[in-house]
Image 1 (cartoon, rainbow, N blue to C red):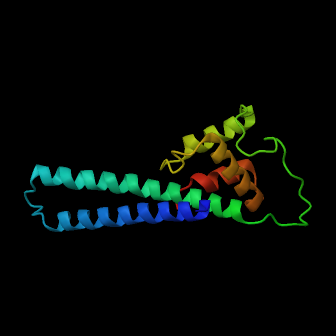
Image 2: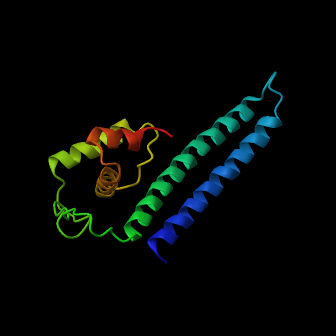
Image 3: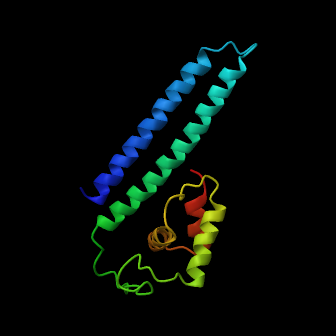
Length: 152
């Protein structure tokens, strides 16, 4: 199975999880007399809301992994005049240490992201996503980081 198919399946699963959790939360909320609510029911609704938040974050991460897999599967445009960036060597994700500027970019993305959507991805993957976005957007580092971390 290709990376795109695997990521698409993971996205489908986490989106289904969010959907089920939201239905359970709605049903629980609707069944409660909120004039004098039972503390256990309030706790159950709070737990369900926390699970929805966690699942939504996982869905966003799955989406970004899918976006990367699709971009990686697409052939590179020819004739653009761009030279290949060999700063990471010839193999993406090589285990060599990250340069200080690259590490600072990753740190800025992780600290400025309010919803932890990049949690679970490696620094190398995050840096590759940043570089791909920078090529696509053709903007400054700060503009690309802002586009990556701002909630939609």
